[in-house]
Length: 356
Ligand code: HEC
Ligand SMILES: [Cu+2]
Image (cartoon, rainbow, N blue to C red; front, side):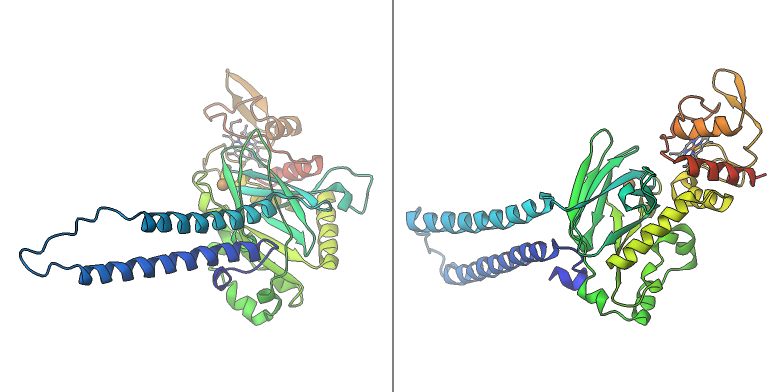
């Protein structure tokens, strides 16, 4: 019955659907049988007169054996079904593509292997934020880590969920599919489904349906949730998994590669918006968790311990890669190191220069 509510978006859908249906079926049968017996006994053994006495019979071995054995067999059966599904969730296919996932307050960063670059001389991974691009029918292994508190990566349409913590890597693996339901969806139906209010578009732009850019049947999108309460903006820690045909996927990687080489204030603003900076830094002068970026570039910053530093390229670079080195006076040492590439840092600096 799960498929009434969710897409069958990965290879794990059939086994999870089956386990869920089986449990529901057993629960319904047990409910009907016990309640029917209850009603029957109430009527059959009701008190018929004032001196009606209770039977002396204390127990029956036959009945006890039956009601111990049958449930045991049923539960062992459920265990076998569950174990099979679980082993499927943990077994990584030999040709699985590895994608690194970094969770942070409050954004998801996805890193694709450098081998997907056309320019193979560059070894840094391709990155996307809050949008996970996947190739249809190609197994993936997500290797996950948190920058800060505990998060949890959950995609109900994939039947996949795994905690993302600091200090250790966790993983999850699946084969993403363009679900039959989304394959059959027309562009109009998609538009209808993906309507967002203006406020939502502003706060969670990644939720706009990217499949509208592709011909129907070649793209599917699924919601990614953080299912661990991880602070203020936990409920906005939403992302999309976008499953594409191999050709579209290749084109998308080329697009990410181009973006990774693009150094500009615009790119800096995109990084600010999507990489999580926005949840702690404003650009209008107001104080959020950290200092505002307005008027930051080239001005003197008071540093804990009584010194002052001019916010030049070096200071900004250090503040991003190693935030604890110099703490802005009056602010907590709360910023996690941001793993931005050289190109990304340059774009951010160019963006800062526009924030007079
Ligand atoms: C979880 C909150 C948080 C996130 C996310 C965050 N920062 Fe920070 N940041 C802080 C805090 C708090 C400070 C002040 C303490 C310090 O200097 O480390 C700070 C300081 C800075 C400074 C120095 C500012 C100054 O006035 O001296 C820079 C530059 C900076 N962050 C850049 C970034 C960039 C770029 C990103 C995103 C890629 C980012 N931060 C993400 C919390 C955050
Ligand atoms: Cu989270």
